[in-house]
Length: 201
Image (cartoon, rainbow, N blue to C red; front, top):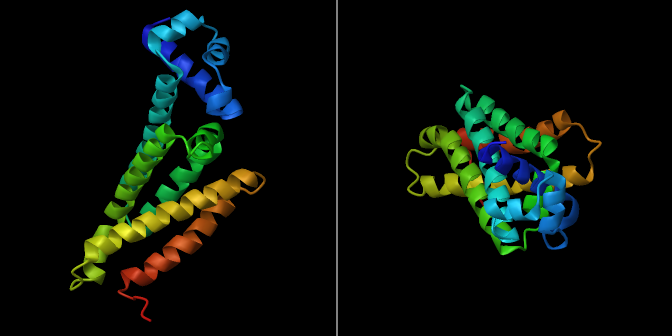
C-alpha cells in the first residue's frame, strides 16, 4: 500500500475511533487496531495522538468548507446559493455524523477550538460572498455595510451549528425538514434585509 493510501486509512480509522470514544478515551493502539496496522507504523505517519487528531480535524474541516464553497459558487441566484450552502452543510452533518461530533463534542479541547474557529471563518467568508452583492444595493449609503454583512454571516453560522447539534439529538428528523427550517429562518430574514428593511427601536 502506498504511504498516502495508508495515511488515509489511518485518518479514517481515527475518525471512527475518536467519534466513538472521544479524544481522551481513545488511544493510538485503538486507532492502529481499527486501521489494521502496527502502532510502530502509525508512528511513522503521526508521531503523537495530538498530531493525528489535528490532522484528522484539518481533513474534515477543509472538506466541509470546500463542500459549502463549491455549492455556493455553483448556484446563480442568492436564494439558490443560500439553499445550496445549507444543503451542503447539512449533507455533511448527515453523511459525516462522526466527524461532526468530533468537531463539536470536544469543543473545549484547544485544538478543536482552533479548527472550529477556522471552520466558522471559512463558512462565514462563503456567506459574506453570498450577501455582499445584494448588501451593496440594499444599503448604498451605509458606512458600516461590510461590518453588517460580517455580523449577519456569523449569526447564520451560529444558527446552523446550533440546528445541526439539535438534529444530532433527533436523527429521526429528515434532512429535508431541517433544510426547510433553516431556510425559513435564514432566507426570510435575509429577504427583508435585501430590500433595505432594518430593525429600528
